[in-house]
Image 1 (spheres, rainbow, N blue to C red):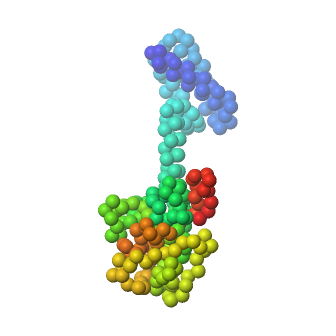
Image 2: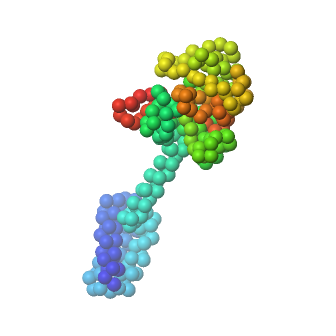
Length: 265
């Protein structure tokens, strides 16, 4: 009984305040009936008439639901809805807009160091169906020298790396003939000029074991040749072959942490 009376007092006070502040939303006849019900409900509360209190609350409920939906939600429900919305927004941003990625190894030294946290533009190349390799919308194709994040699904990587996300630099595009020679990348027999940021980076062949130690490799349609900037310590296309475009999940564009290393990439 005490719980019902306490709830009735809360609802009558709240409804009275809502009618006073937002009464213009409610038709005049409905508003007058609601005010009369509130007055009768207060009298029933004063007398402790439980049946009349229940009847009064029942009469107010349609007005509350129609004209003031959500006004009497429990606090826990409001918090749950807010957290649910925040989770949905977070998942949407992470899946389709921007995601953080922690560099796990030295394979991209000196550009990226172990422990760096970078931001990845997830929709740089297109929109992919979450948890699959199916691309729903293609926006553009990866360009040479851009740093990409991709899944290892279907690649002949070590067992410990299956299902993980890798980060490498695109050096060979579909249809190109790629050769690693004298620390440089040659495309279709011509030296590919490197960005200034890679002036100290020297690429090492290590025999190209994925291609039977061929001197040159031809990139098939829909595939890319990717390398780590630290080719002395990088598992990349030299070892597991070409990267399918469908595996690419986004382009790295910023070192976000630590603060001393914040800059675009």
